[in-house]
Image (cartoon, rainbow, N blue to C red):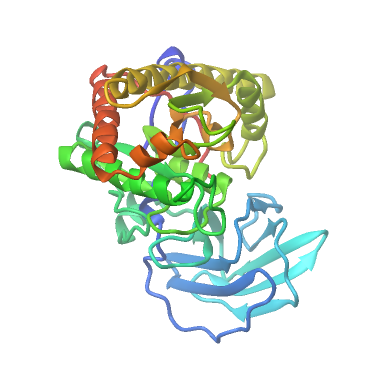
Length: 404
């Protein structure tokens, strides 16, 4: 799935990362010896054959992994898993393109060493958060032969079973539905703000489900939830979900809290200038969520990032205004309802994103509204109308990323 910067159409094509098509280990897995959990590593699984092999590392927490060997190596690859605890070395036999693997503590981080049976390469890597009854994070690595035609052969051959939501692996661009990612703030061990009778995480999830229902009724969108149960998903993983899905819009739902309990009203946030700079720096780091392999020319790379961010911020601001205009009829708003902040969930440079504070959970009036299914349906219905209006403008979206 590719998109193009109109302003750079004659200069550079910006590639977008692979879609959420590979969200589940769709290749049939042949049973491997079960190893006892070691630290944060719950299990390692392999599946596939000589045409495509998949490795899944089940983890207790999120990880931002990096390839530390040269990408040109075809007999082995080493991936660093920073901030992951490993009590003892784990090893196993290979399968398909992998002859064997080893997880060990080395150079200040856990390293995954993969030895290939013949010339092979890592095609893509992505992280899946806990969802749909799965309680662990899954770091997925797809390996293909060195000269594999991945664009037409690999994606077409892997069946798609999405864990968060069903996403088409390949669809003609003209028929492609817009992808909306709904993020229910907090969850699991993170309850968020406390109201008099409720927790923010529960309010946010109920609102997210109401918005999903309103959008799905239109038949116009593919809707993805960062969580649809009371589960904890860390902030960077929420961004990765949106980027992996090639999202056209990201909306994070929250319930505010603060003051003496008299303040009430909804507000909406878009990315601040400080957050923009932070996102730009992260986009230039290999292995982070924004870019896999930085271009050789750092100046060109930064220009591309700046152009992308400028377009994304403008579209985020446009959508934020539409949301406020639409919910104003039924929901009280803060006096200064449109704000900016450097929230992590807003950092993706190529996905228009907003964070909607639906009201103050520590205000009795707002809390009553937030817990009222009727009000929730109306409010999220108005947000859905704002989304419809946003896409009716036929805005062309800019994207930026590498295939990593």
